[in-house]
Amino acid sequence: MVAAVLTVSDFSRITHLSVKTLRHYHHVGLLEPARVNTATGYRYYSVEQIPAAQVIRRLRDLQMPVADVKAVLTASDASARNALITAHLGKLETELAQTRDAVDSLRKLLQHPENATGIQRRSVPETTAAAVGQVVDRADVFAWWEGALGELHATVRAQGLAVTGPAGALFASELFQHDRGEVTVFIPADRPVRAIGRVVPAVIPGAELAVITHCGALSGADISYGTLGAYAMAHEISVDGPVREYYLRGPHDTPDPAAWMTEIGWPIFRADRAA
Image (cartoon, rainbow, N blue to C red; front, side, top):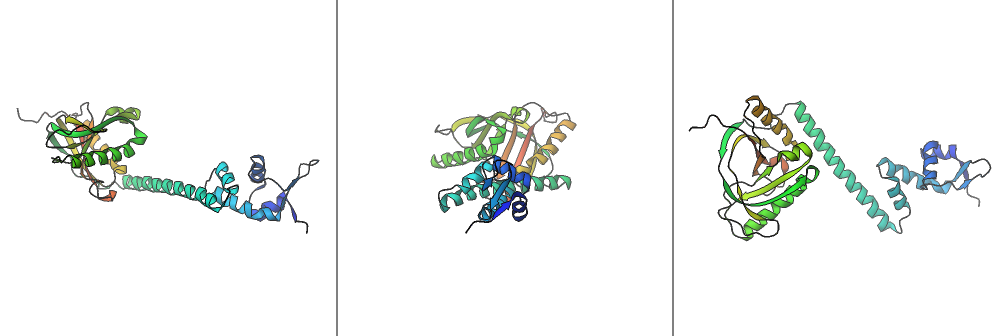
């Protein structure tokens, strides 16, 4: 039997791929016609190519790059093909979660949520601590922060140190201004930690702070930062120095970010302190 030959117009109607798209897929080697008339340039497809075209359309609807679609179609076996598709679906799920977080944060911003308690002024004393510090790109700061915090908790526990306060972090102004800056994550302890790996003993300096408590995931903390920073500027008490966070309830306490509670401290000048 001779396989049915379809014109590009017929193939387009059958597969719901436009003629322009079919031309592009031909040029990039993703879906080549069964035959091309060398005299006229007309392209013809076979009925057997319909399933491949349908798979391509669905993968492209899922935003899979052309090179990855080609790899799926030419995979040596089902396991290799499924691994490529699974990897792409995982990437889509991650992007979807990030989009949902951004949408949720925007809705909260537009609704002016009560996700932060009242602002207080506080004097924080100098503190002995185990710390991990590094210059970090802003895009990597959350993943780095999680790793450093986990390493600190493990080291403090292994060395039998008594924790004297909530874990915290110092964020240099350059991190926000230039998307790269020094970050120091620390856990206050009753005595100096023995240096091991990235963990070193440190003395966290005392500071005068305006403090706000942020409830929930840190992805929405920029709203609390905005409230706190505006307060410091409006009262003309803001001074240079790293912003602080204290994790009253964080990932070490619960895996649910919605249950996290973070104190954010903005460095200020305290004119109201008793002499």
